[in-house]
Length: 111
Image (tube, rainbow, N blue to C red; front, side, top):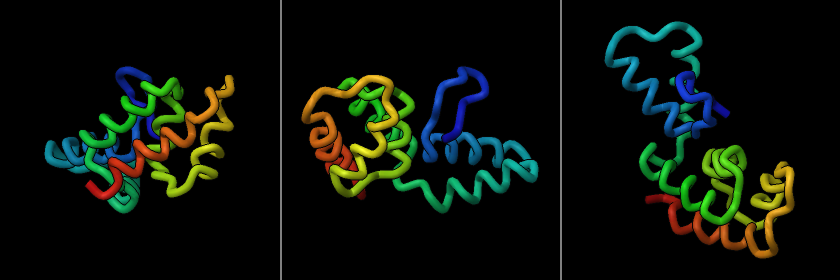
């Protein structure tokens, strides 16, 4: 999981890719930045805007920012995978949260 240097908040892989693309246009990336750029380019499944929208929708279900970023990065395909990510929550999400999250993820997949 990436962190925004300025705000310290967790950001998704697509959001990290957008930041690195901007920095690449401004000049050459350092070694670590280039590795991060290549990784993000390979694994980003959504655009940064769509990833941010999806993250906000998931947080609207009461999912923490950290778990919502993990869900955006993983884009799980079944409810078991969603529950595995949500297991990291300090509090147990309400019943049905995993199912609702999967519906939202599926709605945003492949757009």
